[in-house]
Picture: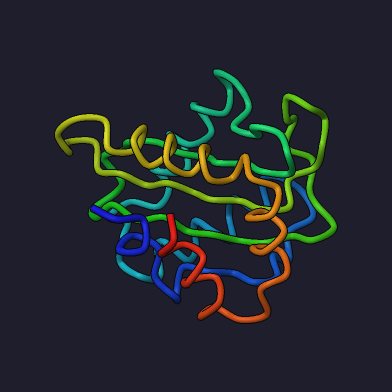
Length: 150
């Protein structure tokens, strides 16, 4: 499965409103819930927060990738949001997260699909030019084109 199949236009938030990690996560959770990807929003939220307690999903370079397998997820999906001013995510390099990808995978899904998606994202997001293009894209179509290039 390609990332562009999992990240649909209605799962993109070009201007996140949240001012902290919890508010941003809730915005993206709402998008996943509104699109029917979740069967139990609260369960997935608890699972995401449990994952964050094991270690921040702020991977550095202004990127956070909260992720998890959960019984609260019906369909694998990825939500994406931008916060140009950044939000503290306890990232390993201390930089605020400006690009946030939330990976949701059903618990019963075979294998480690969420880890494969995480690996794919991490490899591409290391490229500063790609990150900058995501920040500067002025509409969802441009972001979709960038994602399809992954």
